[in-house]
Image: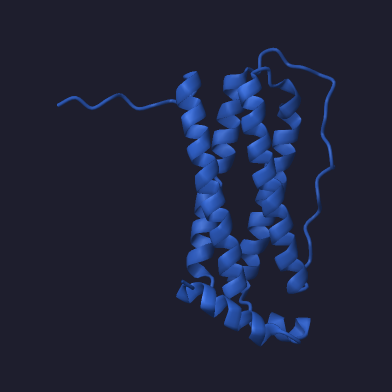
Length: 176
């Protein structure tokens, strides 16, 4: 069964067929442009940070987690760039493709790297949530919604990994 949102998305796609970039730019509002830009810049910054620390990971499970987080960031970057191309928006400066370092800092542990991943993913919730709530253009809303759902899934994975490894700062158990 087709959801009403999916139906409206298909109607919007048909309505947008043949529209010039100039006509599409009249549909999108400045708030949406800001959130597309902000999500893209945040994901690029997060990817650069991840690349700095990824070669310092020792735990094989954390390497798997890192790959999932990196994959989610790359998908988000590609999706936001596609929206920017659709509306002919200017692109931010990209960080280097690889930030590998030959320096291995022993004082940075897998726990520290996990905390960084956890905080990077958590930082996307307000950006994506508010951007989604303030967006009225269907394809922009859909892009933000998809990445909000992806962020929730990444957060769930990080919480479970953090609990398993004892890396998560869990609040004390409530016992009345």
